[in-house]
Each structure stands twice: as C-alpha cells, then as structure tokens.
Image (cartoon, protein in one colour):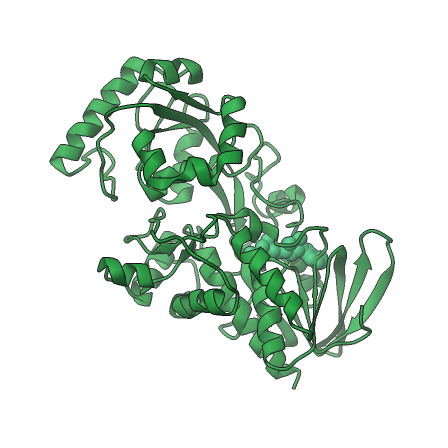
Length: 458
Ligand code: ADP
C-alpha cells in the first residue's frame, strides 16, 4: 500500500470500479480497496440488469422511451420521496454509462430486454451472462490494466481522517494480519454499498427489518461507509427505507434468478390456496407485503416450459436451478397436479386460476390485478412451480449527496474531498427502488464521483 495517493476509493463493487477507473483516466493516482477476499460486492451477486432509456435494443424494436420517462417511473416507484435532481442525473446518464461499460469496461450484453416491476416500458439491458459478475470481472480486468490504480483486497477502511473540515486520508486495516495503516489522500470516494447484512443497523433505523427476515446481500455490505461518513460529519438521509426483494429462497434468502422468468417472459404468482393475490409486475415492496400476508408467508411462481425456453434462465442459472430443484424450492412436472403436490399448493384451485388467466389473455386484460405486461396463455407443460419469500435486498438511505456526488454535512454544505456513489449514497430511490435502476445509478454516479474526486485533487 502506498503511503499517499490522490484518490482513495473504498469498496470494489460497481460504483467503486467506475469511480477508480474514471479518476485514473483523469490522470490521478488511485487506491481502490476492498475489505473482502473477493471483489464485486452486491454488484457481482446481482442480475446486472440496467435500465437504459434509448438503448440500442429499444431502437431496433421501435420502443419509444426517454430519460424523462425513466425519471418519472423511478420517482413514482419511490413514492416521490427521492430527490428529483439526483434521479434526473441517473436517468440522463444511463445511456452513456451503458456505453462506458461496453467500450471502457468490455461488458457484453444479451440481445433482449427485461421489464421490471414499476417500469412502464421494456427498457432494461441484460449482461451476456445474466449476472453482475460479467461487469465486475471485466472491470477488474480493466483496473488491472491501468498502472495508476492500486487494487487491494482484504483491506478494510476503518476511519476517515480529516484536516480541519476536509478529508485528508483513510485509516485502513488488513483483515488477514490486523495491521493498520493510514493512507494520505486528497479525496475519498465512498463506494462501500448498503447495510442489508447489518441486522443491528437495520433494526436501529427500521424495527420491522429484524433477523427474522433473511438477506440477499453480500456479507460485506454492513454500512461501514455510513458509519465512517457520519463520524466525519456527513448527513444521513432516508435510513428507514429498506427494501425486500419478493422472490427469494425461503430458507437461505438468496435472490432466485430463475424467478426472472416473471420479468423476462411471464410467470403468475399464486398462494398455497392456488389463487393469484398481486399483480406480478408491481413494485417490489407491494409484492413483498402481499406475500407476507399469505397464510404461509410464501408466494408460488408458476411458469411453463415455454417460459423457460423463451428466457433460457434455467440454462444461464443452471447451478441455481439444480440447487433449488434438489431442495424442493422449485418443482418440475408434466402436470399441474404433480407440481402442486410437490409444493403443497391446491391443484384444483390453481387450475381454475389458470383457466381464468387464459381467458384474460383472450380478452387482452386482467380485470383482477391489471397485469401490465404482455399476457401469454399458460397451456401445455411441463410446469414449474417455485416457492419464494421476501428478503432484505437494498437500503435506499445513506450518505446525503448532491448531483456532483459530494457528501453533504448537516447544514447541506459539501465536505471538501468527500464523495460517495452507489448504494451507500441515499435519497435517490425514495421509499422503494425499482429493479435495474441500481446499475444505472452506480455506474453513473460512480463515474461522476471519480471524475469530481480527480478534479478536486488537482
Ligand atoms: P455498489 O452497488 O454501491 O457498488 P456493492 O455492494 O456492489 O455496492 O460493493 C460495495 C463493496 O464495498 C463490497 O464489495 C463491500 O465488501 C465493500 N466494502 C464495504 N465496507 C468496506 C470497507 N469498510 N472497506 C473496504 N471495502 C468495503
């Protein structure tokens, strides 16, 4: 580790990679540190889908979209509690960030789009492997090619050092040896992610988010940047808004990517009694709350072989599929009776639900729940029925930033030399983040934070 550098970036997830590369490309020396032995954070665990209005697939398919339309969906999806100025930066930066990932990062994409809950159009591009690890592995490779970036793992930032009001360094600890050091720097970009894996912190700000709720998150996302930032004078904002993801493994909390058939093609969600109870493309919080109210606290996603084939998700996520099949989280069968008996769902009622759904498909509308996507009849098998339960996924609150990614103090003034990007920064997503907006956020604000931290250290 160098004794001093221009910019220190804390956390090697998507936001941290974007910030480090951007600061180095502006001619600065950068230290990018990660406390875990693996890089990538929640970004690597995510599906990596990214909301990009005006993307090349939309253009090809003739889908009309705009940054304004994305901003409107994001704000409404978060009950208008997010800062419209921050949201506009994300929406305006989306297309350029996707191009940056392609050309600077070397990321490849699938040729189709996903429509996430709360979005009023199909606008989310998908990494070729349908995983955020496509991004984090390619960005790691890119970082390793850039001489001006020193990338270290097993190195935890423990404290921000200040000179007067300005950030002047970072105290770090090697997580293997325990050895402590201080790196002097001119600017810090905090990119340490959220606090979904820190139950004490969750309960402190939102008592409902206790240890009975599992989490989809990396064990590394424990809110360190929020704690360090607060100690350095930062204002915290929206801390009580914690999101659960509805489609998670009932016994481990892992996000079930096989369930993305719901978003990429179609799946209907029923309860144990065999009845639909929510619009399958509604917001994450709406679906999560609806699932929690069911008699066994679970939802069951139903799709058929057509859904599996159209999306290829059982192949792209073959490891997950085999794992959940072996553990009876998902059932496959030639008949509805078969999958229902494996999962303990009422088969006769489910058959009625499907008959009704197929009628809705013919009529072109769903009067019960107003399904907003394209409606496909569920006819021949094999069928898949998957149990799911909500788990903590994303924390909307964090360090208060402005549109230049500067961290603000309690008076609203920027703390000199202190920038933040990604999940650690709050007030963008309001009460609820829409799916695939995090990627748009982390690469847009990550690049802004890196560039501005570089300019600050001139
Ligand atoms: P984002 O999506 O905002 O980029 P991620 O969760 O993908 O966030 O990445 C955040 C990364 O920051 C994780 O890899 C996490 O382990 C790392 N991290 C968290 N706290 C610290 C810390 N104190 N020092 C160094 N790295 C940290």
